Length: 146
Image (cartoon, rainbow, N blue to C red; front, side, top):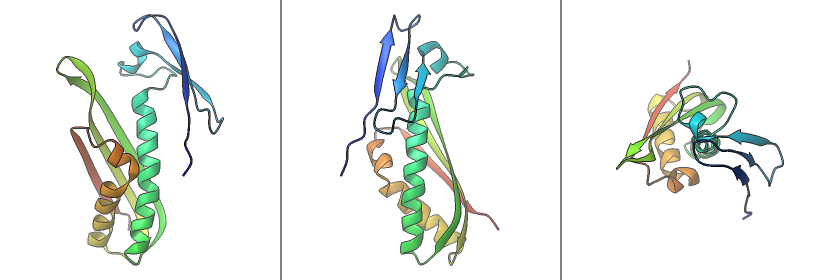
C-alpha cells in the first residue's frame, strides 16, 4: 500500500506565526494555517488540522460505507457524509474532543435498519476511524433519504 505525504512550513511563534500546508503526494494545493484562526469561530480563509482530519474522515467513511452497503446486498446511489471535528480543551491543552459524522444516503436494496447497520460497521472499520480511536467521542447520525 502507498504512503501519502504532506508538509508544513511554519514561521514565527504560535500566536503570531503562520504556515502553509502542502498536500505533497497529490499536488492539489497549498493551504494557509494559523493558530489564532484555528481556534476562532471563523476560519478566515485558512484551514486547520481539524478541517483536514474532517476531510480525511468523511472521505474514508464514504468509501467504507459504500463497501459495507455492497456486502449487505445494497447498491449505493448517492452518499453524503459530513464530519464535524471539535477542538476543545482537556487537562488545559487543546485536544480533539469529538467527531460527529452525519450520513445521508440513497440506497437500493437496504431498509433503514440495514443502512444503519452498514453505517455502524463502516464507522468501526474505516481506517481513519481506527486511527482516531483516541478521540473521546465519535458519534454517527445515519439516515436514508426517501
